[in-house]
Every structure is written in structure tokens, then in C-alpha cells.
Image (cartoon, rainbow, N blue to C red; front, side, top):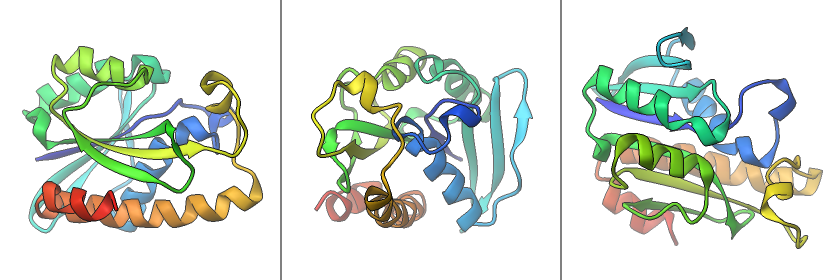
Length: 187
């Protein structure tokens, strides 16, 4: 069983913001792979889509909490599905990476990302996979203001390219060896 988590904030006010790129990429992954529609799981306070890919059971989780409280939903889902942290893939924004860059990492610290800190606290480990999607633009503004900004039209083209690349890498990572995907994806 594989757990894919899209970090972001729920609600229409946050659609298209830089902070929600993880949530939106997890949704794109679900659509691309024709997984069933999301349903709300009250016990986890999350939207969940479950299905199979290449014989592997997959659940995509979109916590319906604010970003900095995402960990509870993820830990609850991991316990329910009996998923070990090394089979969890968290997709999230990264203000330390330039727009158009992305990295796959394993076992790293949060680097100040509140959503990732919440996941680490809830799982009691850093040993899970993270697709870190760069959101930093050309402007030099504080991260807490940057994350709530929407992408400019010229930036949206870059986001579409990295989204396509990330969905493809996520598919390869869950159906193959994430370490190999990491070497290719991080170039």
C-alpha cells in the first residue's frame, strides 16, 4: 500500500496559491491515473481517493485542515492502511527552491515548512518521501507572504511543466524504485 499526500489549505480561497501546489499536484495525479473520486473521511478530516496502480494499492490523501495541522490526518490514514512511513509520498511547496525546480528527498528535516513539521511530529519520523516543488519567484519577499500569492501568467507555464514532470515521477516512484527516480528527478 502506498500513501500519497498533497499538502495545502482547503477551500476556494486557497486555490491556485503557491502553498497549495502539493494539494493540486496530488489531485492531478489522481485524475491522470483515473483513480476514483475523493470522499470525505470524517475520522481523519481528509479527502481520500483509493485505487490500484500496476497491482499496487494507492490512497491519495488531501487533509481538510490548514497546512500546519496536516500531520494528524496523515498519521490516522497511515495507521488505518497499515502503511510504513517509507511508503508515504508527501507533495508540497518549497520556498527555498526556485520556481520550476523540484526535488525528491527522503528522511530530511522540515527546513521550517510548517506542514512538513506537522507530518514529522505526527509520524514520529522523518523517514518518508517528499516531492518538494519550488515556488520562489523572482521577487524577494518573505516566505509567509509568498506562499499565499497566486502564480502570475508567465509563471503558470513553468508550473504546468513541473506539474507534468512531478506526476510522471510520482507514478514511477510508486511503481518502481524511488531512489532511482530521485536521481533522475533531481537533475
